[in-house]
Length: 98
Image 1 (cartoon, one colour):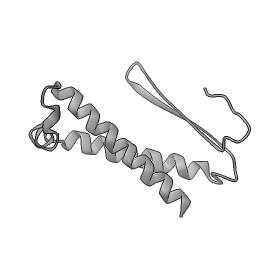
Image 2 (cartoon, rainbow, N blue to C red):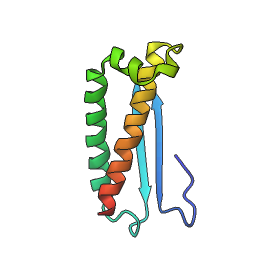
Image 3 (cartoon, one colour):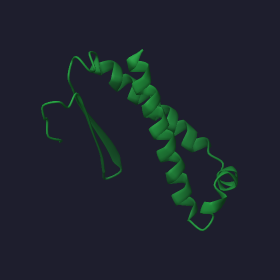
Image 4 (cartoon, rainbow, N blue to C red):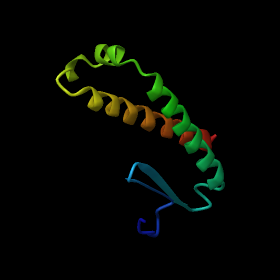
């Protein structure tokens, strides 16, 4: 839950609990006229993210992020997953603007 305040046209609440991620969307109809489309875009992006994470090559990731070699492998995978998720969400939002 997030507060709904005047002037906030889009609120995304994302949290995880017990191995599941939940995403809540509240929007102003002028900002996001079709929130169901946004939900579909986020769902598709998360599916793409899951596929990319499954196909990730740890050796290639280590080569791409040499400064992070001291971190455990799980940290590098998590960081890449977060970057990919952020990019996917940006693309989903851009597609809504078109």
